[in-house]
Image (tube, rainbow, N blue to C red; front, side):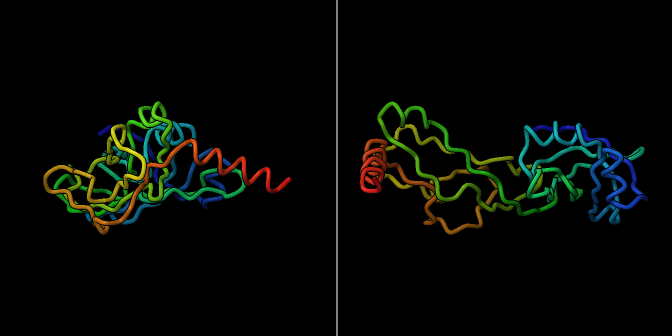
Length: 193
């Protein structure tokens, strides 16, 4: 898991003033740190966020101190996508935490060669375990699946000490035919004409 270092400064200004100065207002908290208002460099935070999911672990440097944190929440403007506020929580490697992590389906290109598609229903699952063991994402290979196969939560395999909190029968995705979807779309288009 990547340990990106993110530099922050304590914030005394109001959030709007911080945004006008080119920073992102935020808050960091945890059992070893009282809730502290911070500001982050907008370009640096966007760069860090590009390769990571919301619940990624990052190193947060604040003054002389550095903590391992999880990005708990990123609030964005619904119209222009500007980051309005960031919430981070400090964690220790032996802390037991629960997080939602993305499910990554590998092997889609093998399905495409067989003219099959992966129809995804659920893109993330909630897991629990020690912070040091929590992955950034859960992956499953679907390349050898056939039409009609269902990928369920029970098909996901995680490391020792990590538990998925979702129902194991919950359907994540289904393998469908690429041909039938295009035929259905064409018949729907011709019916509309």
